[in-house]
Image 1 (cartoon, rainbow, N blue to C red):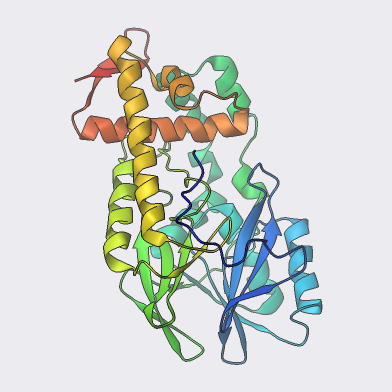
Image 2: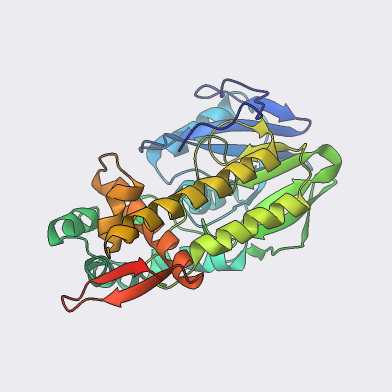
Length: 346
């Protein structure tokens, strides 16, 4: 994706180092936890609460992230306590340590219901969401047997990257108000990247906790999964962005799940919308020449070489764009006699 425009402003041009925290606003601190991917970190925020700090997202369920939490509470936050946790969505880098934090520090969980239930499903019924579902899904859309098996060889990574979740939780939904330390934060939700990802908005302080919905340097992954193969995830995501543009003031400090906090919310939303329009244009150009499967469209949308981890994400992204264009009448499905679905211009 092209870099963000110069109209974005980064008040903290350098992220906190390992074991460090940065105060980004009165009563809000920021630190990072490591991820073993090309995107090598996730942002964690703490909001000052009555007698301690409310956690916003948890990090991945790994020994490295657990050790980082322990070091934080023995170092910059020594003598202070965690009061509760607010998890934005079910992805393992955000919910992965919810079970451990609940057990280690007695924290109660607040989370949107669809995100909680899907995390529970992923942890409790992996067979229903595993290879037997994904193998025919990938093959139907043109991935070769070799690439399909490479993707599936990663196994059920969700179980390896999470520590479980508490058996009970407090539900939040769009329009709720969350009280933290005497301050009210409006709860906004948006789909596309996840099911019903939660964000927090404090207009009085010009603060917006964006989770993964609006990030400065990358486009959030918007994918279609085997469990809901005809989902219009991109349409949902774009509607969410336009709704945020109407709801959230342009001068907020955006606190994203990855990357640096920034100013320029509306500019970034416009860039993200344009980015997806460009991907749709690339699909249009490719399908003008011939009917193509999702696998056939991959190099037109992602021309760089992809490993199996990246290929899985890219496949879901391309299918999200295809489903969006099908819903909009721009593409037509052509089921193949070989069992592969292909798409042509309407």
